[in-house]
Length: 93
Ligand SMILES: [Ca+2]
Image (cartoon, rainbow, N blue to C red; front, side, top):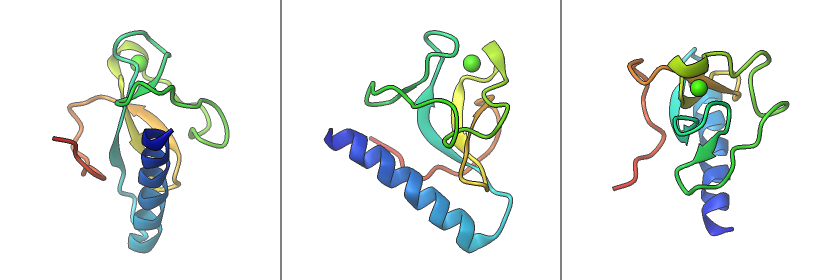
């Protein structure tokens, strides 16, 4: 439960940062469906909630090529290719 709260805090911070910057920046989050397509998990092994209002409409749409999670400038989740350059919200050691 503690780690779930941390994940929620990360999402809220990402939304606040995005709103303040008023930019089109997206940020990497610690989520992936690398191990099983369309089965998304946070780094703490908790399941990523799917659908509205969490995900951008139409997302995830990248299939096997996009297995990493960002939060976009709308505050919604999208799947993306890990080769894309985006800042991180936070990094675990
Ligand atoms: Ca995928």
